[in-house]
Length: 196
Image (cartoon, rainbow, N blue to C red):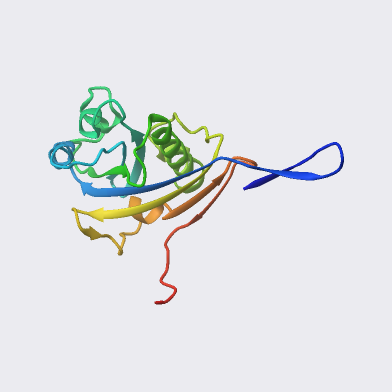
């Protein structure tokens, strides 16, 4: 995005706004925190993002969060985490996804930008405030940002077919956020255009 500013002699000059670009590789779904924790401990990647869907009686609740100073598995094991409201609750089906920012060595501010955009998208556009468990971190970032989401099962199989209503189906594959005027654009699913 380019901003044009008028200077005294009626000439324009351009200021490039800062853009943040993130490729998030999501892995899952895991049905328990213990399964996720065991899998995460075997990986070399650093996982800073997580999202889960808790489905009970055909009704879903969603959560998106970050872990920076501890692993995702450790974060979800904290006694006060919302995930414990859904674990072992009869017919609740949990689908937990764990994400790594794959294109850069992520700083805490990078992780927070991704969490803020993802939480804002879920709360304000996709599922609504009432179906999002976490009520914090919905303030959009001050910089323009682009997020590309990839969904993986295990280590090598990218998920192309997505179950209706699942997190891979509802979170857009590509999101473009413009800080002025706080607008978000997205593509739910990329489609094959042709071979070159």
